[in-house]
Length: 191
Image (cartoon, rainbow, N blue to C red; front, top):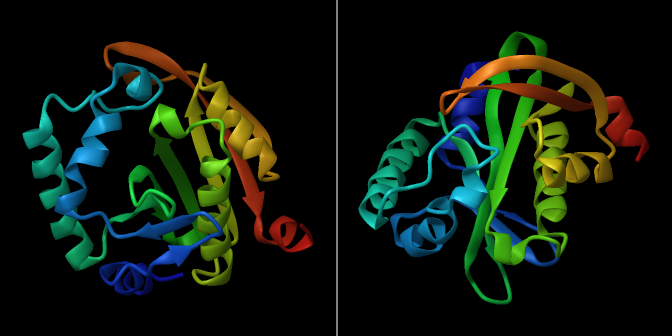
């Protein structure tokens, strides 16, 4: 997999669709929906970023994301619930290891939409895209210890636990243990 190929695909990020969700490019007009979960400390507790301080911060962030989309180096989709038209989270690739055909996925959802299978549905579609469209060999997901909801999503999707790196990441002033799950293209094809 070549970096240039990924950048070309994501410079015109494709819209993905599942039974209940649309995964599409994030827009500045999504600022209210995205701020609604990004401002919450309970949402960012197990993430590497701090809650958004105000709506202007979210708007500036989305403007920045728009610039990154234009060059193809941002790999995350807004997750839209079809029934309401609301952005309920985001899901996508956080990084690629180009020489080894590996992608790392990440996701975050508004708590009001948790426990309904939306995260599993969105991540399943991103994994499908990674193996089918991007021809990845391996997709992995990392989590900060204590993020049990995220771990359950990974397990439901057939990802395999690989272990934890103790206090491997300094996050918001504390050293946090980081775990990893993964799925290989061959395992995905057998599902």
